[in-house]
Structures are given as structure tokens and as C-alpha cells.
Length: 170
Image (cartoon, rainbow, N blue to C red; front, side, top):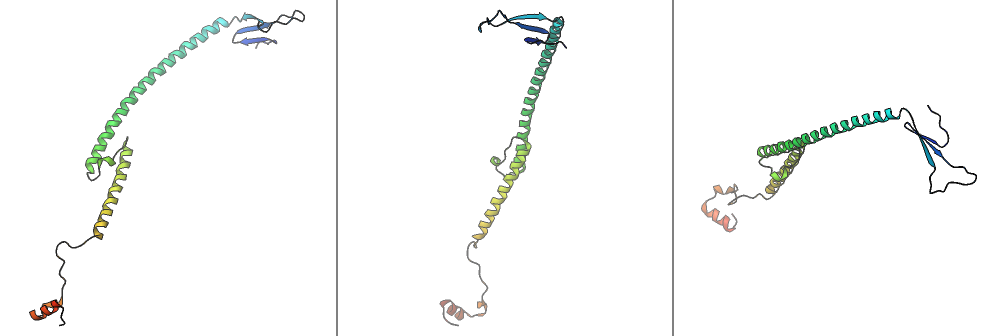
């Protein structure tokens, strides 16, 4: 390793030394920077050649990666399109298999989401059916004429039946 002196900067094979005038008490004006003396290391041309070669290799590698990335993006686009078609077909099959569920309740961008919406829709339909049955039972009444109740009038003669109907005592 080379030794460095004060005011000397070493930048990858280039040695830069700053010279300042020291004429007594005179200082260089601030708007004039000190002169720089550049000495080139004998290995500098080889270093530059090596760096250019590495740069070319890296640029080639970047180009390969960009091409690969484009290929992956194209494949991803095709896969997304295929997924959309598959999910759409699956949704249609689910709707055909469950005609009691309205199609507005079944949606999703993938099979799992369609299954989840099917399960949720099934719960909603079952809850509505249950509530409908409970409400219909609460308001049950016989259709048409009221049912005849068994009474003990079968053994009465016609006069007694008339008297009973008029409200008289028997």
C-alpha cells in the first residue's frame, strides 16, 4: 500500500496532489482553487480496460434480466387471462348446481372467493327459508270452512237439536 502525504488524494489508480503557493504571507484568492498535480499510476490503463470489460458484462447481464422479465410479464398476463376464464366457468357451474341461489350472490376473482361467496349465499338462503317457514306457521288457519268438531249431538232427536241450536236448555 502506498503512503499518503497531507494534501494528497488517491482515487483508484490516480494520485492527485494539491499544490498551494506559499509566497510569504500571500494566500491564494478564494475564487482561484489550488492547482492540482495529477500523476498516473502505471496500472491505470489496465484498470480502465478491466472496468470497461466489467461494465460491458454487467450491461449484458442487465439486458438478459430485462428480457427475462418481459417473458415473465407476458406469461403472467396469459396466466391471469386463463385464471379469469377458469373462474368464470367455475362460477357458471356453481350456479347451475345451485339453482336456488341468485347469481348476484356468487362472485369472486378466484376459486376460493367463489366458494366463500357460495357458502355465504347458502347461509343467507337457509336463513330466509327458516324465517319464511316460521312466519307461515304463526299465521296458520284452516282453509275453507272450519273443521267440524265432534259433538255429542249424534244421539239427539231433531227436536232436541233444534232446541240446542236456538239456545234453549236441553
